[in-house]
Length: 409
Image 1 (cartoon, rainbow, N blue to C red):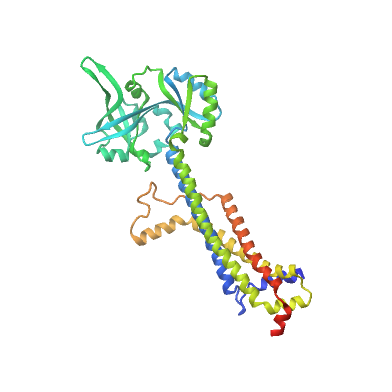
Image 2: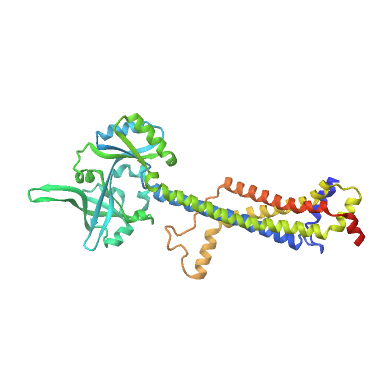
């Protein structure tokens, strides 16, 4: 009798007129397909934006910074000791100066970072985002590289001289005043993030002069770690080995809240999109209810020839399972195809509208990252929800009284 239940469940998918699916079955399948594919597309695109933002921001700011309350003497020896840690990819001296940049047109607050140009390619993605000049230009004395947004604000370009004023006080016979230095712009970078508005780069030697440090001194040491999400753990290991007087900060202190907000936003959007799957599950429920209602005569006959409650439930539960499998499978296929072709679709829409849809964002394309584990969770959750929606109305078939139904026939 179980094989009969499976066969009947499969048969009830079809239309009475011989179509592949009945109208209600088709609606339920389409609903599941739209729900699952929407979840796959949106989560994949949000994953892509998150990874792109991580690369653009966390690819520039230090993963971990080792500090002391006083300048670090003989920093090359300290760096050699730090790089013995297998979790450290690279390390370099690092001087971070808060200041004010001034041109002939405007003033803006900035962070002036003293770096070693030779090592920067191992620590940062910034050399890949230079739109004018190169990082190596910082080897010139009294030179600076600024972001494109900052350059636009102060109306400065490569070759222009600007003045950097810091909070350090210089005292002379005629009085005390903030320490300043005149630098020449030798390059412009563009990440298309907020970093472009305030981050400026100079050579470590120039920053040493500005902070009045000796040639073997630096203020801190910048690290690139093998896993940026373990930056705190790696920092603790390093300062433990270095001894007393050292402490660390990581990217989580400066940008951690940004990425927590992105994760929270992704979670909320995913939960909202799961409502589409919920609606599709209601369509599955409605399909089973209507099938049970339309097949009351057949149910009564099956009861009279000896079918038990479990066998009756299995008929309509089988129908619901088949609808779920078909709808979710189509949703996964549609989601994959739509995701990998999303940029072609966006290009077509932009061509049709004659405008860019991403002109306000930091990239001009839709990044995506397909996380198969996420898709597996989406499929499992959708399948379980559909199973529940199939089982509940299937129980109604066991409560029908065959005597009353056949009497009316």
